[in-house]
Image (cartoon, rainbow, N blue to C red; front, side, top):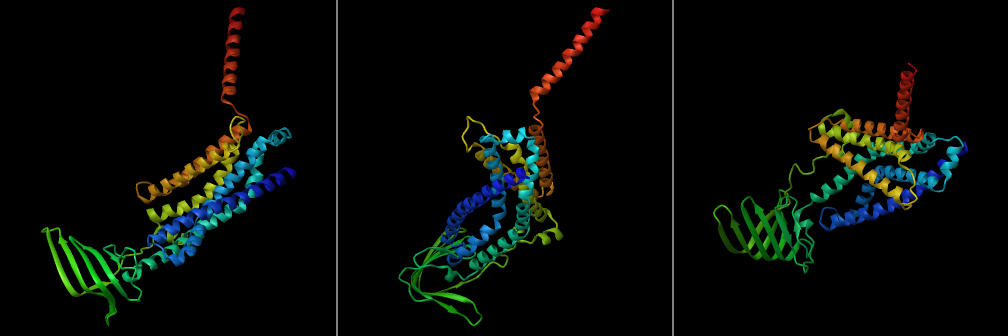
Length: 378
């Protein structure tokens, strides 16, 4: 009882501290990334905090799995370093007996990781996609910020309005660059305003400007002047914003199996299996080398997690491509669990390859001696 309570108490302290540190680091990184997307016009600047919250919620399962792994490796490494492992082992507590208290501590976290990956991951991605699509589908002129070049929704036009523009719906020193097929057009005007037709279509009316057009087919260049010129704005692609597999509910993926849906579903289930495998790996991985630094086990744990997670993404992409079975990652998790279990059993039973060689070599020598003695007696 004292053994299990001591292990769980130290694991809880290490896990809590690790979660706080990782969330702080990830929030900072995600904030910089989201601000970069907002500066490029991919995200509404007024919705940065909302996008950040959904992003953190969607990636919380990965953070919890990493925190659990680091907490297990750090706790066991500290026990080795302070020679407490010698005391536990000498009192009859083998390394394999650490498995029960560690899994008992990790079980609520494993259930939470499974729930987050199956429910919170698609829910947060769906809301992020809705925010991005709503911002992308706004009118072209609504995208334009004075003093900045801004691309249209379909990517075929670039707008610029001078900073002196202050009246809503009107602008000065307007610049438009567009491309339709092989025809490229650049239009400049001193003034511009928006007109809405009875059909609901929006037109940008330019006054006192010039237009330069170039046609790649016949390599002709045409320059024209105008007092008034109208350009339709606000068109959008009807196929824009199609749902991605990561935004679909897990139940929908299960009821509609195909290569992409099944690969996404197995990836979500694999997050919980990954967290469990990492707990087993931490038992086999944790050790202390006096010649290495205190952070060596944690660095090894970090590299192990990165390698494992990258293999998950590679397997997911391989399954989505349709070249292989989308269930291949489930077999991968079982293989990793088997290797980790054998590794743990080797350390628990103190198996050594050299000891096995010595045993078999000694067994062979005894047999040869018996054969020689038998020959002499004869």
